[in-house]
Image (tube, rainbow, N blue to C red; front, side, top):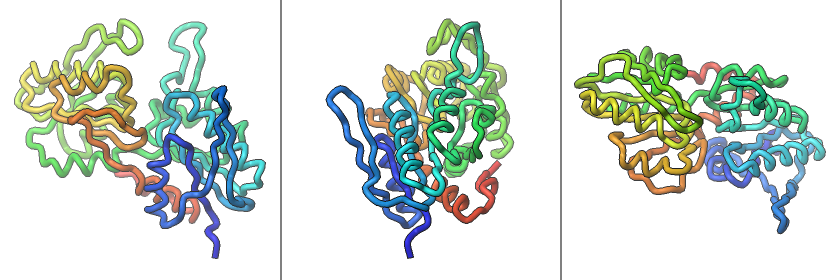
Length: 310
């Protein structure tokens, strides 16, 4: 009997889609991406998807080609008479543009949500949005998973004594507090001010880190300026060790060098974004099984909230 569902992948997230399919026990669907010399590309499914539930795995990290690939995959599936089209977006890019923080700016997260809806998506499965309220930008169901499902068990295996959870900024305090409650340890905050995007002007620690094993929790690391500054500050304040955990490994520009030269023992990510640079301190945990289980539950009309540790 044919599977009622099929899984396909864009170019950049194929590594994760293959792991998801391995967990689901199904083959990765055949899809062709035709590239033209001017940079334009076209999508075509190489097998029938008529009447099937389609799951399209693609993180929308830079460049914008990844987002455009996903939009074309959705459009092609709609025109090929797929029954439902489900976008599996482990990393939802453009999410930092979630509000008007100053006059005359775009709200990129809302624009991307609209683009996906217009293309024809029926459901979105994503993980650790930069801001939870982005779920409300969609007019289709959004299943919001959490990287804590793989990060928290890893932290438990470290058996760290005198553990303290830290947030690199006040905005991430809710996320860090969730970890602190689950692990039964104190919470420390960093208060930072920015000179401009990706540039930290100043930072102060709120709480006690002397003699503690500190784990900094964030949703993503881009240039690693904030996370490495916080780590160096905590080490200077007497912390035994400093580690960092974040869901999304953006790691752009000087990030790898900054992490390597910082006081961080290690920095742990999920594999929502591929990491190809070399940095001995970077460790990635796979979320393939978690996304596979979410897909399985969508197919079987079962609750997904049972997947949440907290």
